[in-house]
Length: 215
Image (cartoon, rainbow, N blue to C red; front, side, top):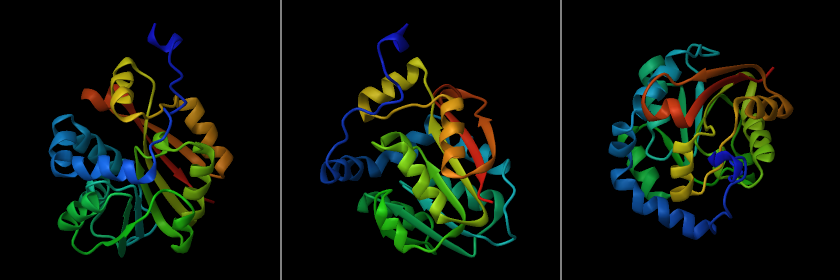
């Protein structure tokens, strides 16, 4: 089996920030159409419908927003948030996201210490970012710090599957079994951690959704 030869929980050596930004800048134009055809927009909508907002009009931060698909799914399910902040390393991705979510604040920043300047938010969204980080435990800790007390994290994370190996070949991402992901979330301080398997198409094979709360 492929998993005998591949450490899915370890990303390939990370590209330098400038190179990674360039990769996503080039991908920005067709990104939304591509993930839509693969079923990720439907999967994200499914995950957001399973969430219960911590407040009627929460503040929302989408870390590594890409073209804004995760944040759009939140707004479609729960209405416009009180404030919406989008971060990404790619200016081109953020420009595309901003066109779809014109009231959002956009910030060019990786998932790293730069986020510490942002106040904690009621809801933090993060789709397929952790698997590109060299130290996922530290990344979960940074996400925890950005969630306000009583708030929630909504996460999409790659899981091991032979299809994930194909994605890994292109993007270098890791993949985490649900038990490992649950452990890292709990160690970061999250509680009420709920696994949400996607139900159809490629997302059901390569990803899981998670909902977790900060006490």
